[in-house]
Length: 124
Image (cartoon, rainbow, N blue to C red; front, side):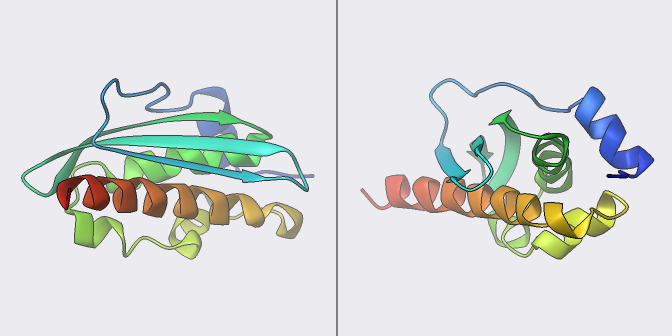
């Protein structure tokens, strides 16, 4: 399996790894078929994602997509962050092998769940 240089960079040097204590939103997803588990935590200030962290247990593609989505959405408004698609993640990584495309779904789903969690907390 061949990964792009960008995928390998985000796998070997992932950005925004960790967990935000007392996060404004948390999204947990997993894929039972491949065993990937992903958690994204966000901090929101004035409707902008001011900080975002991830913890991922999985393959190189899962780690790279987690890292990339944090880079893509940091500093965006909630509404703009929700516009980021799995295709945007894959494109910014320089592509993924077809068998690994599901990893980009996980990253996009984890972000959406974190934002949904944030919005639920706001409405309490």
